[in-house]
Amino acid sequence: MSGKSAVRAIGLTKVYGSGHTAVLAVDNVSLEVDKGELVLIMGPSGSGKTTLLSMLGGLLRPTSGQIFVNGTEVTGLSESRLPEVRAREIGFIFQAFNLLSSLTVEENILFPASLVPGSAKAVRRRTAELLERLGLSHRRRYLPRDLSGGEKQRVAIARALINDTKLILADEPIGTSGRHKRKRSTIEGSYNQPRSKPPISRLSDAVQLAGLGFISGGGARFGATGARAAGGG
Ligand SMILES: Nc1ncnc2c1ncn2[C@@H]1O[C@H](COP(=O)(O)OP(=O)(O)OP(=O)(O)O)[C@@H](O)[C@H]1O
Ligand SMILES: [Mg+2]
Image 1 (cartoon, helix red, strand yellow):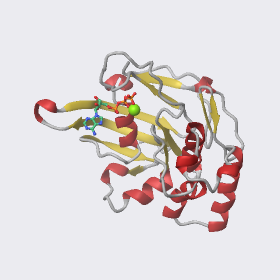
Image 2: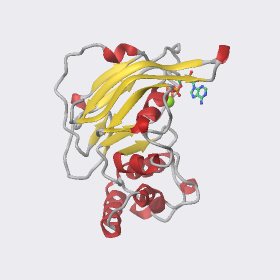
Image 3: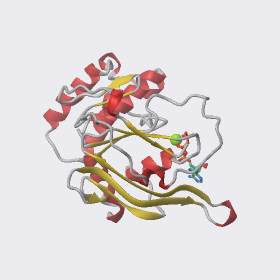
């Protein structure tokens, strides 16, 4: 495999349930995302986007296939090793944000940092910087239930950035509206088709997704023009 892949998946398949209620949510997807590359995954509601991202993020075991994140095979890791590797290698922004309800904004952001060894001082500094950049400083001691939807979203983004991971997975970070009414179709091997690669923005530690400027770190700026889209829709 190429040494510069942030993530590489081979033949990923996920079947939920069994028998005649079995759902084939992801069907034989292979993809490779290089460091610095931005990939958008598009498809109608129910086509398997969350399932695919959850597998890439080590949150859900595939039925078959392999996943390498930054060179480490996450599909080969034990349950006990997964949390630390996940925290060190992957920032994940969930579709429903998944903030911890009993922790404050600041504690939520700090949580992934508590799973990996590192300097407490550096983590405090980065937290303060993220709070500032995402416009959350005045909410740092609030609980999630006292936040607006957009504020919760920004906390989720800050939490995904705290460990400065090479890979950031964002599941509809700009929200889901009711416009996904199209028929379900499974995300399948269409990812495997050869594509001509458009120029790709570098995003070693920054991302900008359509309309939602976010992210930080080294101060790099990125346009959305380098995105390449792949979809089962
Ligand atoms: N835990 C589960 N058990 C059984 N079926 C599931 C489970 N999670 C998802 N599914 C099914 O798998 C398919 C893919 O779901 P998934 O959540 O990955 O879709 P999605 O593309 O993220 O949709 P949306 O755009 O609505 O978020 C759907 O048919 C869904 O009903
Ligand atoms: Mg989803």
